[in-house]
Amino acid sequence: GRPGLEVGQAVKRLKEHGPNQITPPKLENRYLKLGRMVFGGILNILLWICVLLELLLLHFFPGEKDAVTPLILSAVIVGTAVLQWVTELRAESSMEELRALQGSEPARVARWAAPPPLGGPEEEPSEAHVVDVDPLDLVVGDIIFLSAGQRVPADVRIVHCSDGMEVDNSALTGEALPEARVSHPEKPGVALTEARCLA
Image (tube, rainbow, N blue to C red):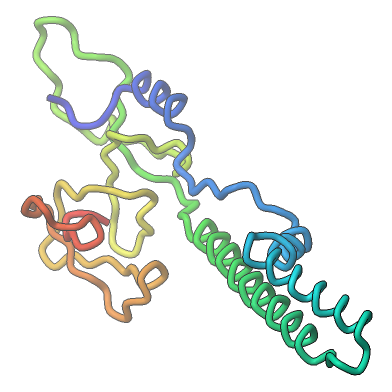
């Protein structure tokens, strides 16, 4: 068969699956999130009840109790919540940075204007059928043509590549060196993150 998709198929898949982009979850207001982390959750509620009871004991039995325990408990609750909050803010920031990495240059894909005539010979693919498409409009089944140094605009399965092809995943994995890629499929059971036929 012919490589690539018909324009109509691509439009249908784009409507069905949506644009080719990382869709972040709806972000909660950062200060509301901090308040929820400090005062929400069953464990924090129980700890705040302990603080309140300690303060009541301190009020009704002055001199017999000290204020150190409720202060330490409060500091632990707030400190833990702030650490969790900062960690989540960093994760949200990383997600935004990852979204910014998505290539903005047009992707060259094989698209067909119409199916071949019934019973007629299939045309051989030619440069005339390779079109530039916005990376957001890439869909499942597109055949993407990449050249050296170009960003990979989507998760792809490599169907053909030159010997010695490498992909720089350092922004995603932290690996210092580019990783080799091949076009032959991996053995069953190989994790997708380890598959050398994916980029």
